[in-house]
Figure (cartoon, rainbow over the protein chains, first blue to last red):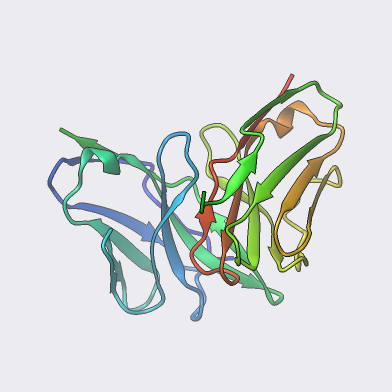
Length: 112
Length: 113
């Protein structure tokens, strides 16, 4: 299984970049890394995903190391509304079926 | 609305009763997923459907849990003889194809007295 490890919490000043790390050393070569976030009392929201190359969209950037054992989610200009729990997820394929393994995530607090 | 809809949003029931949770995915999404989230914890994957079939049911916590999907649309998660440890938020998600980015509902908060 693609188990992921994240720091339990981080603070970031409003307007600054938030860099959220994730270790996924057991991920296989063809398994994607996904990032979601969950704001209190809501369902998780998809942010970004990647396989090998760095990715960018309107929400964030994803930097994946060359050995694919870790990645960093970057929120370039954090706002108070970015306060949430951020989950790094390794897609896992087992016996031809898929699973998502969510860890406990990183609780990001953006400070005014 | 265009999002994933779950009902009820809250359910309180007595221990030993059966409960049925409903998920209406986004129209046209072939893949549907159920998760459980206990208070203060991450999401626990339960089961996913590709169309009306569930390729892997091993994530279901016990034989008291079952799920079905019909018409490649609505899904129900049934918990029989509920126990207090079943108290959690049950989340449903859907995606156009399996394991593309998932769209989540806001969950059903289940409380077992």
